[in-house]
Length: 503
Image 1 (cartoon, one colour):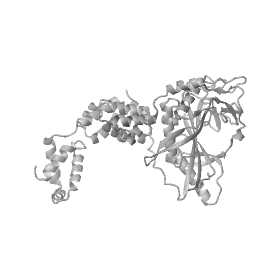
Image 2 (cartoon, one colour):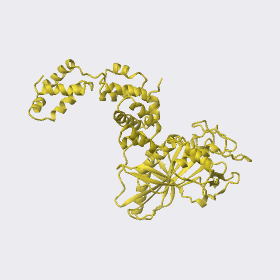
Image 3 (tube, one colour):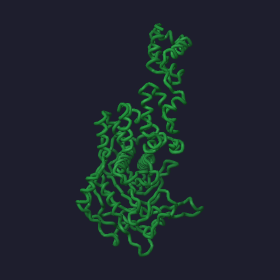
Image 4 (cartoon, one colour):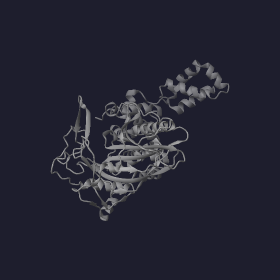
């Protein structure tokens, strides 16, 4: 039996609207570092598992725990996934890349260093095109993408008064994708991450589940006076795990820096954390530079050499990317650019739409998905995959066909949709059970509408006296009396006859 909405969807309230703009004369500059976990059943340098939400320290090899004498062995599958990502982002793959040790001490880093890449990353360059609110497109340049291993996790609430260490994530393969500082608003930052996530999901190199930590964002934020070419002092906000928190954190940090500068106080270069409870950022530590980590080539891992033949094979296997998918939907189904952009964001929504459009008009399918279905995604803060598992497209088609045939009204379909998300009964059975059948029989509607006119003589006489707008009021009252079941065409025609004294 299909899971009910109440047990499968988050009960969180919908996202709040974006806060007000920055004070006049100021602008923000944002660069993002996205840490994307590579979809792999084993870690970057060991064969330990990577399953989400395993019991603490159940997925740790001797290599991950940095036991003496253990040597890392590079996961070639993870390299292929990273190379596929580089191709999809149109970056330049470095044929010779080097893994280096990034040295720092932290309890959840048992080696005392993180294996990463600095001077010779896997990819340089690339770009992502994002859609702006005015409908235009902006291309955001990518500076680099490198591979690295994740650290473990400190647990502060497991043992009273103590910090526990979970090394399950230690050694998990990551891609760090660094944008250039070309984002100018919280909305652009959010759009960039959403677009990047849709690309990674399309090529199956990262599942993009921010709530599970497989996609995390560090935001570098600075502010400056408009038309000032010089960048201001930046602060880095670490480990943002939702698009909503990203928007909130970026906006708050920009306003915080502006307040300091307007009070003639300096902005200190810091690493900061975002407090989701208060919507504010707080200082974590002073911002480090590359030299603070004493990078040097890892002596246990030989340089990574990429052959052209390997790249050609990956290019040939590259699946349809989001931009191409959106263009195809617009071309094949005649829907608008905005509709295709929403429907083509990921493969699941595109396939869902295509299934609907095979049975009902494409415009009907597009309008229903972008309004009714996507509204439920926003309200419950879930992805299309969750809704699709609860309400398969084939079942949604049956509901839309009931509207097309006039069995139920579009208004009743909204009520039916919510009930269908709670159980797996057939739409027709639910319509009968809920009494949602549309009333289109004149014999049933005429007495009801006549009573409506008789009970409201002032409004009736006002209409007959020339106030045409009153007609809409009568229609609304009629739909209320029929609990939304009255066939709008029949209701309008009968009201017109009665008000014109033709009934």
